[in-house]
Amino acid sequence: MEILDPSLQTYVETHTDPEPEALKKINRNTHLKVLKPNMLSGHYQGRLLSMLSKMMQPKLIIEIGTYTGYSAICLAEGLVDGGVLHTIEVNEEMEELINSHLKLTNVDKKIHAHFGPAERVIADSNWQNIDIVFIDADKKNNFTYFELLIDKVKSGGLLIIDNVLWKGKVYDEHQNDADTQAFRKLNEQIAVDTRVEKLILPVRDGLLLIRKK
Ligand SMILES: C[S@@+](CC[C@H](N)C(=O)[O-])C[C@H]1O[C@@H](n2cnc3c(N)ncnc32)[C@H](O)[C@@H]1O
Image 1 (cartoon, rainbow, N blue to C red):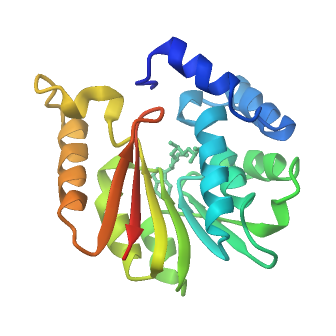
Image 2: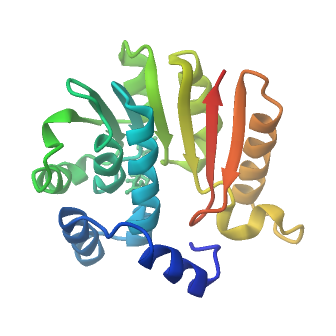
């Protein structure tokens, strides 16, 4: 999943704030109990999400793809008093584990977990003036989620899409599997979208930062 050189990754992690204790436990528990634990944002990306959120001082955050709650907790660290993070997870079997992880933190009361397919949960919501969106679920629907939410994001709001460098495959012309092609198309669609400013960060598997004008 890491595209950075491992020694560079180690260096930046050791000179970044340490992973908070509760998140360390959640990280470890995810590796013990859940399949594909490398889906979790992890220490370095988690601290970046937390810092971006603190800089934005959000009232309303929407996350698509809760998994075990790690990135939701990182993003919720930046919520202002009275702020809320809504996170959506399609797999209802994760509910107990997510709740047990949220309880380890002091942001649990600010996080509302929804279970079901994101498209349906978004359609049933009345979210408006969203400050931050984090899209990290079924990769083929990234652009659908972007289009469903862009009009609900306030001017100056931030959308973040994970995995956009797709293990480095998007810039390797020999790689042409369906997921790689989907990420290339997404990056191209966002690159020419005049409603937004965009920047790809080569962090972990690639984070696309999109600021609504
Ligand atoms: C990469 S993991 C999310 C990791 C998490 N954001 C983190 O950084 O710790 C993707 C999650 O999206 C969920 N997911 C997949 N399709 C979905 C859908 N249509 N609606 C909501 N969640 C979905 C998966 O079940 C999985 O738990």
